[in-house]
Image (tube, rainbow, N blue to C red; front, side, top):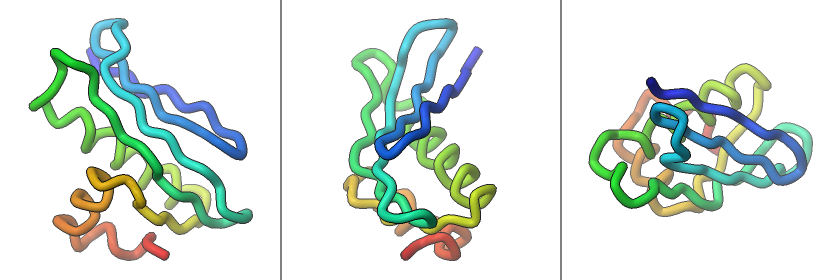
Length: 93
């Protein structure tokens, strides 16, 4: 079972758990009230190749849309996800 938990604050993060084990994390930093920067995405050893990093990025996209916020993907992995997904361009700043 996959579960994603979020901790929001000036610096926030999404954590992804697979069957209760921490499998990945994505961190972000708010840049004002309506923008945040994705600065790091990491999938732990043993969990690679399952699309978990993309699930973290998409969780951030859902969060941004719900908050009417814009996203800047500074993390190289997150930037690749945005570059390959034209349907996500609406939330970029």
